[in-house]
Structures are given as C-alpha cells and as structure tokens.
Image (tube, rainbow, N blue to C red):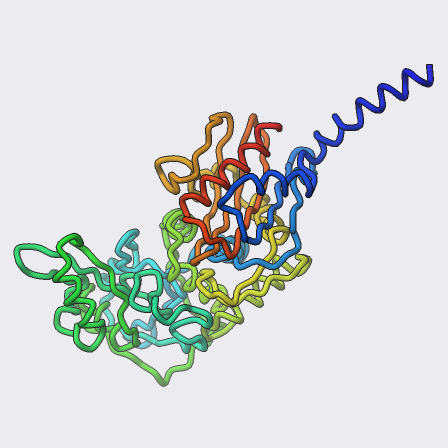
Length: 421
C-alpha cells in the first residue's frame, strides 16, 4: 500500500509543479536560448496568474532594466489614482476680468485628439481674458533624452500649457507648404528648424511632417488668441493660490487621454500628465514632485524601487524591474475595469499595432504596452485566456537583432508559456 502511495506522489509532483509554475528559470532560459534574436541580450520576465495567485515565470525578475515607454504605466497609475475627472484648466472671475491658468492638460488643439471644451469655453467669455502662467521647475527637455531626437515628434518640449501637442504639422499641397497652426508660417525661422523644412520640401516621398517648436508663454497666448479669435493678456505678477475660491473646467475626453498615453504612447501627453499630478499639490509644475507624489501614494511598498526620471520613458536614465512592472499592472487592474484595459491597451499581434508579434494560437489575447529605445524593447500588460488573466512583463535590453525579429521571438516565447494554462 505504501509503495502505491509513493508511486502516485512521484507522478503527482511534476504535474503539480507544472501547474504552479510552468517554467523554472532553467526551462525558461532553455526556451529563450532557442531564439537567435535573444543572443547577447539581457532578458527579464515575470508571468503572474491572477486566478492562482502564482508566478508562471520568474526569470531575472529583480534585475534593473531600461523600460522605455513601459514607464508610462506608472504615469497611468498616478493619473487614475490622483483624479476622478481630468482638469482641463482652472479659472476665476474677479472685477470684470476672467483669469485662467493651466492644469497641465495636453489636448488643446491636439493634432490627433483635439479637445472639444477649452476653446469653446474661452470663446464664450465676455470679460477680459487674462492668462496666469504657472512656473515650471522642470526643463523643457528631460534628462537622459537623446540630443539628436529633439527635432522629432516624440521629443516635443514640455511646457506649462501645451498647444497642438507642441508640434507644427507641415503638409504639401498645390506647390506650397501648409502650416498648422498657421501662425508658424510667419514664425518658422524663429520657432522651428528651417533646415528640416527644406529637407521636407525636397523629400518626394513624404507628404506630411510634425516638427516640435520652441515653447514660451507668449507664444502659447498668441496661438490660443488666434484659436479663440479674442485677445488674451498675460499677468506674470499674480500669484496662483490653489486654496483660493477658484473653479475647474473638467475635460470630457478622459478616454482620449488614456488612449494617447497608452495606445499612441504620446510622450508629451505622458510628461504633461506627470506635471498635472505635481500641480495638484503645488502652485508650480515639477516632474520630480509628480513622480514623488505617485510613489508615495501608490508605490510605497514596491520592491525593488524604480529609478524614475520622467513621465514618458524617453530618458535612458529610467530603470525598473519586471517584478515592479507587474506590481504596477496589478494596481492598475484593481483600479480600472477589464473593459477599460481592453479599450486603452493595444491588442498585440493584431492589425491594430505591432504586427510583428505573430501568435499562431488564437485562444488568447494580449493587451500590452510596448516600450522601445534603440537596442531595448519591452512588453508589459495582460494576457486573457478562457476567463483567466495573466499579468506579465517581458523585458529585453541590449539586443542586436532587428526589432521585428525580436518581436517574433518574444511572441513565440509568450505563446509557449500561455498555451499550457
């Protein structure tokens, strides 16, 4: 009888082990070693089964990695834990004057998801309109941003009140170059790189281009004045006291903000939202204060602690572990519905985004945030299969393969982990 029980236990043990954690470190290493795309790279991964409350994979989970845009997941967590509704601007009326100041809101005249409330609201004002600039303690370009990226859309400058995503859109038509906002046709030599304009004109393949412009309070007021067709004055001397009796204009486009942040991975939106969080507690904007606030409120128990530099992940100084990203994703999952996750996170491996992720098995879906800097690529999010949710972070640093080749290899590994659920 004892011998029969022993035999049953010997067979049951490997079955139990494979159900609790499908891949030991050795087995996962063997899995990634088969893929040429991982050769020479540093790999870290965690797959956590929400139903069983167990890790399916735990590989280099505490190793610090460069996350790129996966840092936007922390920004998302900070946003949803700080605001039930998104403030578009703050204002008050006093003695026939209408004063307004920034919340950090990024959608005014945005080229992709244009705000529908701020410009009509300002247009409707009968009083003298006065803009009160809030001081911004953070530099317009973040630490660790690549200097040779400054003329690209994804490196738009931070500012107190963004307008049109802080970029100029150039389009070709009937032998001329159209500028949006139109003001930049007059200001092009002072605000955007003239060499880029000439290169664009000569490029027969491109019909449109986004170029960041140099921001300032006065330029913002001029752009906004043109948009509402009313004069706006600036008052630099008036202190903003957040304890005074003021009102808030709330955005009606929360979904668009979330989509810009996660699906579109818009860097200026991420930076602006981190500034917005800082501005909740301070009369000025400061990226570092926004980060500190989010860590104190939501991530005080996180381990290992992230080295967090900016809101977008554009900085190469950011470092975080796969285990910490899974912690963040778990917090997000508990704060927003699964339906919201499906709306705001890209479907990986679909025609919607990142088609290089090729899954042969159609029995599951991956909703995840990508993060890419040269030689670094990360994918973190949620895998849904048969009513079960697996939170995961799969990070690859210092790879020398093509990005598409790496994505195919990552898809293959993900599939081999998930098909055994």
